Image (cartoon, rainbow, N blue to C red; front, top):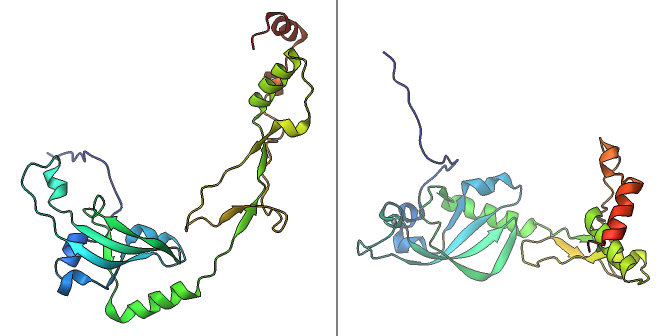
Length: 212
């Protein structure tokens, strides 16, 4: 009689070792060596960490998740993501238990560094003003009509904000840098146009009720 095997829990695609398994077996805890995550190999540019300092963790047994925390270690690293180095030093602890780390062999380190130096940042500039979503545009127009305020098409624009970081290759366009990307809220002809049309009766009803 065959047995049915049931796998319980969340799956992952980890392929490697925990960070402690790597640094714990290296001289001086691997300070100066390079490690990378398997999941970051999806990018054509090199992404890795340079170990700067390692602090083994002393566990007292009163941990919330002992099966995870016993595998953790505090590692200070210099992070390189897609060929760009983060100017700040990062502490890796909460994710150090994940078995997805690989050690870069000593004879391959210079190749990783050369690939990093060869990466050129390609910045794309995006239009800083985008159209309002259709429903929000209708609400704003309705409020302007009820208050008898004149309005122009420019008032139906939203100012875009982009969080700047060393990993972000997108910036807001200006006079010196024209926009390469423009976000347009026109979605084309819908499959059911009748759902987007308002009958005269419904329009008159909302005009009298003044819901906004």
